[in-house]
Image (tube, rainbow, N blue to C red; front, side):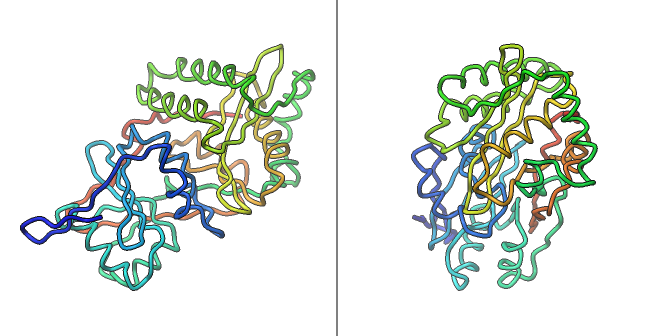
Length: 321
């Protein structure tokens, strides 16, 4: 639905993302052959307070609008017909006083938008590129390229031979939440934005079943000491949203990665471990796992526009295996 003000500009009628919107948003973003983490409703829902995320349907397109660090931006329109795209893009610009700031534009969206608006300025956003891995490689850590990661895993197994893998269920989800809170507590003083991550993690575990999440955890010494969860976005791809482990245990993260891939994701070919946000330690950890490919993304600028940068609030620390 749109409204038109007295000056003739389109006013799109947005609503805040809620859990009740999952089915309709999924119908637009979960597409075969789409490997981006932007195909996961969970990301829109659990981060909607931090990103002030709103959505509407206009001319057959899903339009997602967010606000971060005082700047409004849009996701590329999902769905719709090519012949209607130009009109929708103009309505989005009307919504932002003739300016356009678009974030997370994967290659397929870039090519589509360029056909109707070749004058737009696209710039690569390296810190927003998704890392996509073969499930089989992560599940086995096979091959020369992953030899170093396999060494970390073997060291973990040697030190903790009693560890076990469990799927996340209502019986152990409270232990995962406790570990997640402890992880946040240990970092929040150096990075206050961790409170937003805590909120997203809490929402994910609170609505775990409703969001269709799959999770796994590692237990040793009688306690859950690592966990991970994600969601399947189409027949061959899953997005892994979170991976946490206790600090200072060599191989804990790679063990969680391997066991989760092996136990929870045998029905997909690709595992998207999302972006690195420009954090050096996180980038190194993701590159060390040797992605099969990256989901390249762009920002789009037109007029007065500043793409919000996540590193403005996130710390520059990353986890080490």
